[in-house]
Image (cartoon, rainbow, N blue to C red):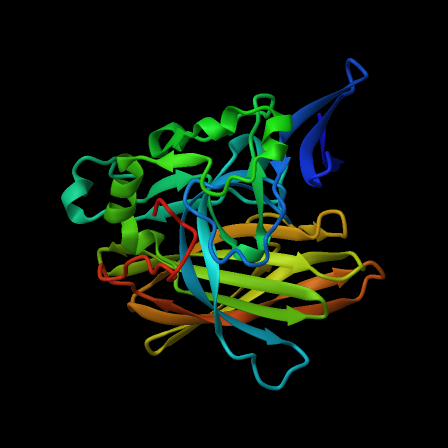
Length: 344
């Protein structure tokens, strides 16, 4: 089964009709599946609301926004002597459509945490880490608002019906959707979602995003504290590797250096999460998650990926230096003033 994403302009409102083309080699037939109607992107939109349906501009999966943070982005270009001034950028925690993720170069986005000791007695002792799969973090610039019609393929996620009640606007047909200029969420949050956010806030919270660009390859890292097991502190970190140029490159190896307390550790190996992804103009992005244990509640990581060009030459693509910090229960969601979020 081969899947292709395609955008088609429809009607005078210039909304994009998102469709997927499924090709069956057995039946030698094509079948279009409607994903939704793309809303025009308003550059003045400060924050998309909880419950907003969207299409990821780069990874091309559909999802629903859960909540947002003004994450501080630390960015540096390889050619610059000094890094750019850090600036706050809206980032969203989202439920990603499970069927769409199968066709994306994304390694199982998820939220994971080590539960407090009061809950350990109810858990399998061999599985101390709890996970919620299909939850990703997306920047404001990667959000393409989407409307669902009667013909749109339903979103699929185990937590969707628990966290949201579908809004009536989502059941309109395509013609009516194109005539409606209705702002606001397509799904309404439930009390279960609010409870989820309140209970797991220290593990959902994100504060910093680190970026570094080397020879048109940009590496973005987002770290998360997931808890303490005995005397060991654990973090997970999400890495996005993006080819911004025209030349194909392939990741061949990784080199990490971890500093914590008075200890410095060096790790080198082939690929990442068992893969050596190829980044082209057709598939320019690979994203994955990993974890790191430290004896100290703070630490620092940095390193580089060895990238290979089409002609066989290689270069070192720097991984930005990022901090590992233990977030406290006092961290709460920071909401921008004067947003268009009417439900959160």
